[in-house]
Image 1 (cartoon, rainbow, N blue to C red):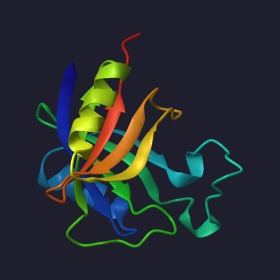
Image 2: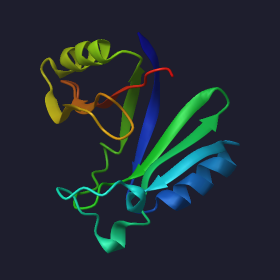
Image 3: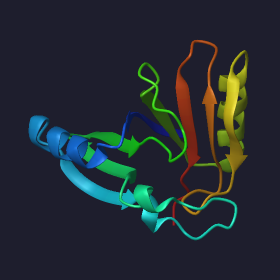
Length: 141
């Protein structure tokens, strides 16, 4: 079952500033912040020293709505126009595969579905309308 969808803002190295801005402007409550420097070590992906303080993931609560913020992935260009994406949270791996497959119809796979340290099934797809989706499975318990 799909649990929720929520906006995901991608900033250009000014994620900390954006968090403070939206916290004040929207009376948001900061639920959590992770930097790229907090990623588990991975020999296939080394975070450059200058990127360690950039925002990997920030979770803000605006009323009953989630707002997520991340800086552009180190080594990737920041593209205005694709800096607002949508995350979809699913409670079952098979359902996440189904949602991902359906969103991929006529679109482009950005990151294949895979296990990550935060999800048993996470991937990114840009649909045929140019909207980028983060599909993530969140299991209870």
